[in-house]
Image (cartoon, rainbow over the protein chains, first blue to last red):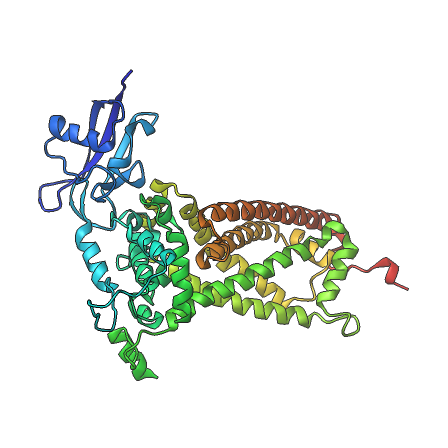
Length: 238
Length: 253
């Protein structure tokens, strides 16, 4: 038998001078297999056209629908409403990112700045001759790089992080993971000393307190615990 | 030196146009000083618990730290020296760890709300860490100062008199709880932070580490509490002879 669920969402439009932060409450009937994405789509279609939230893929791939769901940063499309036994769900926008409106935040600008800051690209330091066969990369190493490349930049690690919550310049697990990805990649010829120039400070690796909320909330189960520890060991010796 | 600092404070880079290595050293030293203090506490609480095996055992341990095997009857000065070394490491560790504290109303509010909403185990452990750390600024300093300046007042009766008759037991109770929790959580954090026990399955090993540290922490709290209760009991029984020092009966001849 379907039950009635109550979804509460923070509503606020920073670009509207008359807007005041309020908590709007919506009651709707739960359907089998309902995700929060479906629930929010229903609310927006039939209860409150003004409610803003972001979605693209609906399948945990794009990372657009990150929000704080009953206190925990999660993807709305990967969260079933049936998980919440009392049928009460409170939604907040992800902290640490610029609020656009209601549940919609600007993770894109943050991620772009992070990518530029950690020089998120291969630095081969040599001219690549495309007529020659590429140098062989060990499958295990390639696999390790691919594993870290699975990051979808949803921002949940940043929103879970106590350092990022307190200090807005912190590079976050997403940034440290990115540096680890290039540090492992044999195509990248940068030394540890080069990487130190990118993250060797309290806004980088030394700001991380290893509370691992990033790892525990990562929807892609990235190995952030071991990779951040790995980068810390490397950077201390760099 | 000043000009180097001027360049770095303005540019964020040293005069060699490199990032300073100081943050790396500070991070390492925060861990290293924490580890030294944790190891010290692990042994300190065990030695202190010697009272559970009787006054003679505690007296023998006290004399051992006064180096009675090295100079005749030992000397409390060695306790002072040890207390001084630990005090210096303690202050340095506090100085380094303070960098991580929330340091404005807004940071405090954001952290507190974040932890309350998220109910995340390791984040909550860190709240315990900063709370006990803050308590230790004061409690640890009181204890270390007394040990530094009155090293001769350690022994089955002297310590018990201090605990009971000098009404130090509330301070020692708070110190015990805060230091054991702080050290327990701290050692767990060190293991995770540097990936010492990551092994093949870091996620699983993290849970295992947390479980073991939790058990050890509880054991240490129980040992510490029983020791404190024993000192209170001896202090109560000895209240009318406050100031009298313990003598080993069998050694009196």
